[in-house]
Image 1 (cartoon, one colour):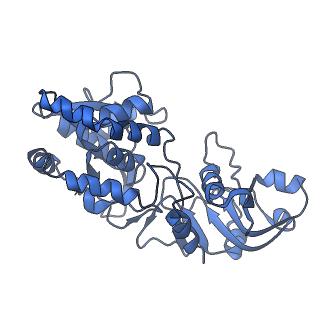
Image 2 (spheres, one colour):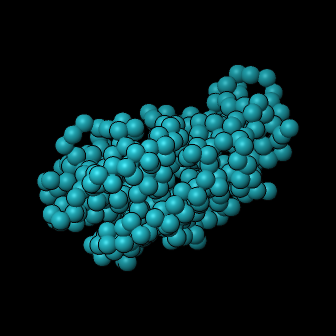
Image 3 (cartoon, one colour):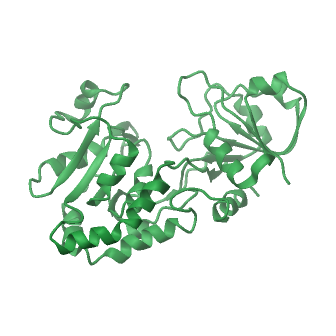
Amino acid sequence: MERFLVVLGDHPELGSPKGEPLVRFLRCYLGDGVQALTPAEILAGPRIEADLVFVALPTSFGEAHLRLLKCRRFVLFDYYDEPEPEWGQSDQPLLRSLTDRYLKTHVLDGLEFGLRMGTLPVDYTPALRKEFERLSSSWLLRRMGSWVGREDRPWDITLLGSVTHLVKAAADGSRYRYHQRVEWMREVASRNDWRFWGGLFELPYFGKEKLEADCGSIDGLLWQGERLGFSDLFRKMSRTKISLAPLGHARWTFRHLESVYAGCQVISTDLSGVRTLIPLPAQCFEMVLDHTPLAPVVERILNDWPGDDSRREAAVAHFEQYLYRGRYDRRIKLPREVFLSQLD
């Protein structure tokens, strides 16, 4: 068995991603052949032998750590949302001399940064399997409810999420914050004929004052209730026809997968050129280009419901090629094969 070492990130910023999702993924498929250490633990321990070393950035990993490692290959990675490598205060010249392979949660076509870019596994919500199985087992009761006039999905649309945004380049080369979530929420709020539930959450580092400086008044767009746990959120989504998946700090979101398993039709931000380890079934989504209204797509979906069931079922079937009930499972080998193939 090959031996893998994951060098966890040690960036001092509170809450910065350190690489644990990769460790969990590798251990799911490779078991005991995976070791995880911080740079400090490497310096404090004996010499280590590994076939492949993954180094999470930003990192203090340097020459002193190399002297305590014997390995054949290095791979760099980080779990930050932005598509660019997150070098931070890392020793970039040294790390680039070790490898040209770099992994991110998603890759954008045409952006290589002088590296061979690949994709990382992400942590899907642990409760998803249980909630999907509960939903699947309730189909008969739901069908019986429809026979007596109870609407299976009384809500038309949902969007519940933080007010994250994407930094984009303007035609003149300047940078600006694109708030697609606010844009979509504002359109939904203007339509009294759409049965909607949801809203946006302020962020600690980007509150209402900053948001309104970019977008104008957001009155009526913020969520007024308590934050929902995943089970409550999923169960309410499963009573909704359309789930909106606008961009956040990236164009892919966990909402794509969770909405599919909840049986919603997904209206997504434009995913053109976006690559993830588990491919998103864009052919099963309705994609809306930036600064484009939702109304034509929403009306089409509502008019076609429920005749478009096969499209939503195809989205679930797509994910189930890679996952079991929305979770990694060592019996389904495709994610392991896809991940390892990009390291050759």
